[in-house]
Length: 613
Image (tube, rainbow, N blue to C red; front, side):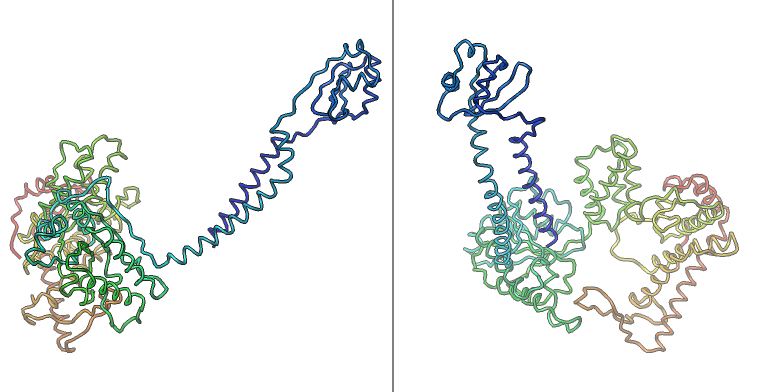
């Protein structure tokens, strides 16, 4: 409503300005209006020799006297000026002294003078009514098109995507090859009696490339690609979502062979009848219509429905039965080799310095998705420009990794010398304990530069991707988490609030070891407690306690035991190597940052031997 009001005001202002400009072209304000006299007086003035010139414009006479005074008179219509003056007694000799000039009246000026006063008001009224009826017509059209889907058609991409543009995901691409083959050559499948899957569900964490892979399928098959988000089906009016679903499937069928891609299908495809949070009839009707449309596909229909979700566990089972989304393609986070390939793709159009080693960057980015890596390279390019460089260097990418994980560096933050010293010893404690344990991941960087909420950080990363984690590795993580706490206690004989996040993480790990992974020797193998997953929110919001108070006490005791074991191990390593702790802390105070090579060289002189937990 407010937007339409602004448009109407703008249009009215344009009309008024246009009218003012038109009138300004044809209307001039006279400096001093000439005196109007009769024709007989003109004759007398000519007889007295006072007239210098006469300009004839139609029936109007513009008279200029010898003293440059201007007068206006009017002659008889249809009679020439010379004939008029002679008839009134002006002799030829008197007439010869007067310069007479006839000026044709401009046709445009004449017609404007006639038409503007009569036609212009009519034009203004017509324009006003036109805009009023146009807005009314737009409202009617909007009402009739309310049930149409807002499909986005991609047929000719500026940059055509194919499987070679999707790094990694080897198994997922192999699974989708048959979809491409069916869209290209359906006859060989139908001749043998094979039923082509009607729906393919792409499942994976955010940023793993579900939409990109769907576009790649369309690019490989060379077919139209219709894209819509499932949330666009749902409106506040019941029945609109079902209508838009019918329209979307109808549009895709008309363009067959084609691909209909529904992004975030869990927005409408969640489990029906959850019984919590109330029902949404519109969402359920939309889901029912999707189920009906997929059942309505003919056997030889060349329309493939691709859908993407990162929460397959909340989808209604009716969507996943054979004949609907019976093909499920899992997209995992990339491993180190795939991360290196993704980095190569996203750095193709960026000038990289010779020092850049994408393998090392892939090593530092475990858990990064394809979207995260693309953002990482873009952040590195932005950082290079900010520093006035023409090429992206390795240091720019390293800084971007830390910016993505922890946030931008806050070097302008004022920190007292005492807090700086505490932070240095705290991070030195983490690094020393990590270097002193065989089962700990190697230290890649130690910094006391504040980033995000962290006053400093110790970056330790595995040398290879890991799917499983052992009890010894968890215990090593507990000891490393306690390293900063112990270093402060040993050095300053008191502790600060800087260890709060470390203690929180250590407690979380210890609880998982006891209640989820069965790593407690006293409680034995078993899972304690169950997280309730309410589908209307799509996330864990409750914890069911399925054990007695006696077991709860034992769980708390075991968590405390694990934390104590980690604390004792950290105390043992730091007490035995206080000289190394001081050397690392002093170097951090001086340089603020220690990279992996510098750190290993620093502790190498002390001949530190890592021990098992």
